[in-house]
Every structure is written in C-alpha cells, then in structure tokens.
Length: 324
Ligand code: NAD
Ligand code: SER
Image 1 (cartoon, rainbow, N blue to C red):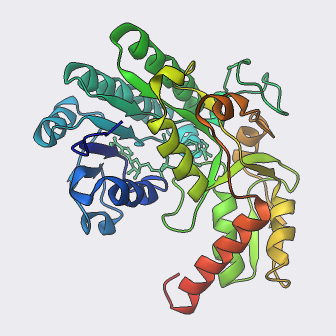
Image 2 (image 1 turned 180 degrees about the horizontal axis):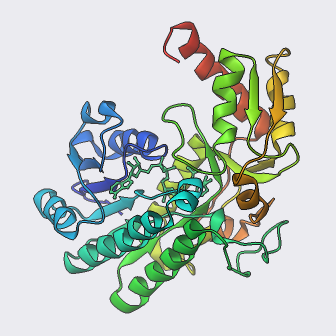
Image 3 (image 1 turned 180 degrees about the vertical axis):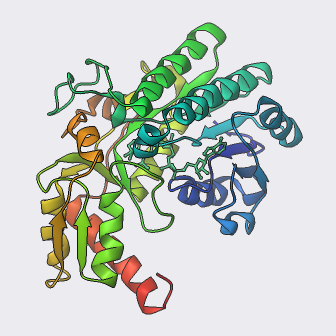
C-alpha cells in the first residue's frame, strides 16, 4: 500500500479521540500535505498545523465527493461516528451518521475507485448472548444498543463492498480506547480516561460503572499501531476484512483504581452506576484476537501497569504546566 508515496489520505471524524492521534501518525508516515483531516466540527485546531483541514459532514454525499475529487483521495480512514452512550440518547442520529454516513463513504469510494477504506467496528458489535470471556472471532452478534447495531451492519456492509465491488474495506473491533490527547466522545468506556484527569486534579472520582465491571481496553499507541498495521497488511494474506477481534488488556474500575493508587496513594473512587452500566453488561470481558495475530501479526505493547504509568506521566506533566 502507498508504495509510490503519492497517495492522498482522507480522515473523517478527525477531531475525535482517535483521529486526533491518528492524523499526526499518518502525516509523519506519509507527509502532512497528503493527509486531509475532516470533521463536521473543528474541535482540534492543531490538525491545521501540519496539513489540510476541511469541514465535511459524512451524511452529505456531495460534500464527501467534493473533498475526494479535490484532493484525488485514494485511501480513507472513516472515523466519524456517534458512540454508544450518545447513541442510546440519540438513536436516530447514530443510525444516520454511522449507517447513512458509511454508505455514502463506501459509494463515493466505489465510484471514484478509491483503493482502500478503513472503517472501525467495536466490542459493541457483541451482545448479551455472546460468550463474555475470551469472546471468539466467530460468535453471536446480537447487540442491544443502536451503536452496536450500526457496527454489525457496518462490518457486513464493508464485507459486501469487498465481495461485490472489490473495494478493499478493512476494520477491527476496537476495545475501549484510553488516551491522553483528545477526550473520548460519548462512549461507555469513557470512565477509563476521565478517571485520570480527576485523579490528578482532585484525587477523587465518581465512576458511572460498578467497580467489578470488566471490559476490554487498549492504550492509544496500540490502537494506532493496529490501525496502521491492518491497513498495511498484504491483501492476499487476509481471510477476514472488516471484523478482526482486537485485544490488549481487560480490567475493572476497581483494578484501575488500585493501579492508579500505586502512583497517587491518596486517590479514592466511589461508584454510582448509570444507564451505561446496562451497556457495559452486554459487552465482553475478554477477547480472543488470534485471527488478527495470525493474519497480520497483531501484538499489543501496553498492559495495565504500563498504560497507567504513561497516562499519569503525560497528564501529570500537562497539569504542572497548567495545561490540563
Ligand atoms: P469520537 O466521538 O471521539 O470522534 C468522532 C468524530 O466524528 C467527532 O470529532 C465528531 O465531531 C465527528 N462526527 C460526528 N458526526 C459527524 C458527521 N456527521 N460528519 C463528520 N464528522 C462527524 O470517536 P472516536 O473515539 O475517535 O472513534 C472513532 C471510530 O472508532 C468510531 O467509528 C468509533 O465507533 C470507533 N471506536 C472507538 C472506540 C473508542 O473507545 N474510542 C472503541 C471502539 C470503536
Ligand atoms: N469505547 C466505545 C464506546 O464506549 C466502544 O466502541 O462506545
């Protein structure tokens, strides 16, 4: 992929939690001017510094086509989405952005002969009937959230475009992503980011999930690595395309608190579960990601201890500098 170095990469939803770190990583690898960051809102002005930024609503087919034509885009990282918690508050919006937006991206990609499209799925593709421990690659997909419904449909739609139109669509089922740059955007795993800010600023946090709720999680450097690696994999080596299970670590809020207390002993946490508890209870605890390991060499670097140490170091430094 991108052998000639001339590729133009479009990133949708670029100002979000993942885009804010994926865009710089892509620009470092492929050159700033070759990575076009787009979003419906400009919540991260930093993205204009090293390359182009365009306002683009993924539900507007004409707007997508105009950007793809203007920059002669041949690769798309489609990150624009409504996540699980916001999706339960606004299910119609979640359907529109996650399904109609994806359909329009795929149609433009098919028409313009775009080379490759990345469209992430999620652990939200699973549901309460799915085995929750070491969740298999092939298993029951009956999610009970609108977000999960859109993720399963997105996996199937991407596979359809690959089989029917030979459009190279790829995707992974990300776990909850933990990161120190942009805040998370309305998901059920957001507690695992918020907790660090509160631990540093106030040494206390009120968690919206129960203390023993184990969920699969991943630190952003591993998320970026997985994204770049699956997109760079040799197509001939791939049996699957849009739905790779992906794992790095699994922990409960109580286990995360204990790990933070190793660095901030005075930190305390109380638990007040809200509507997100039911969402979390429908998702896996641990994931079998052997297909990703076998087909494109997936292997994470960060475990719980390494992630916590790095998050506290990065956010602690920003706090000392008055930037938190
Ligand atoms: P985010 O909520 O942080 O960012 C999404 C971005 O999409 C936002 O900047 C938002 O402004 C933008 N957006 C919303 N509606 C739009 C529209 N109509 N047109 C254009 N842009 C629009 O999300 P994220 O965490 O960066 O997630 C990126 C992708 O990864 C999503 O597909 C999400 O489902 C998936 N994912 C994320 C996680 C996670 O923990 N962050 C886990 C699993 C899967
Ligand atoms: N982190 C995401 C969410 O909680 C999972 O897709 O919605």
